[in-house]
Length: 242
Image 1 (cartoon, rainbow, N blue to C red):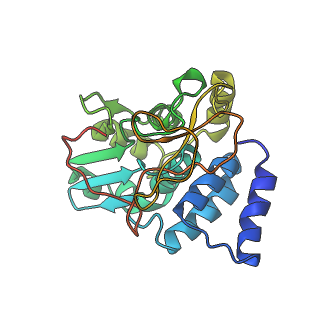
Image 2: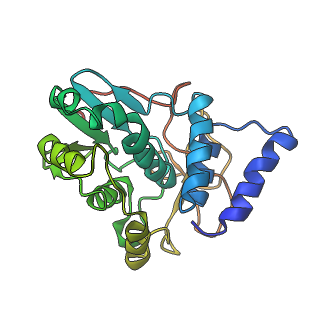
């Protein structure tokens, strides 16, 4: 998350020059400002209000799900904090409500379609979410679907009770962890891709075998994420790996 001030300035200037912000814009700026927790939360809330992240959190009477598979890494970090601090408060503060929940899942995506998967330390959404959970003292239950993280509800209930009805996130410890792991620092030769929007390919000199456009690591171009609908989310079955 370097040069976050410049990224945020460009983000603010978009409205002034008549450039419409979309979910890709919000994902990109959240990548830039993710270490600035209050600012990232403010931008994420704006994205929720505009409908870009409206379906990130899905809460039912017997299941709770956070879907991060279409977010950038910085967006995913911000959304995870928001989910535990704001969305789950009614459940975390009511042991009976939480006891009735049968499943708590975080959808990270399988990682195969993430254009910046080749990062230092094998960085990715799944790795970051698992690290953040460890700094919340939230445990997971191992299961075969690599696109999901299944939360240990019984352990979560004990942690919530121990903290007086909430989850405490060690943000400083997490940032130190990222620094020690060298996260946010992609390999200098990591290939970058621009994905087609609306099915149309942009004009580039080279295309990967999978149909993704290639930009060398020093080249220019915007990084788009998975295709999404107006709300930015797609529903998938529990059994599907992605």
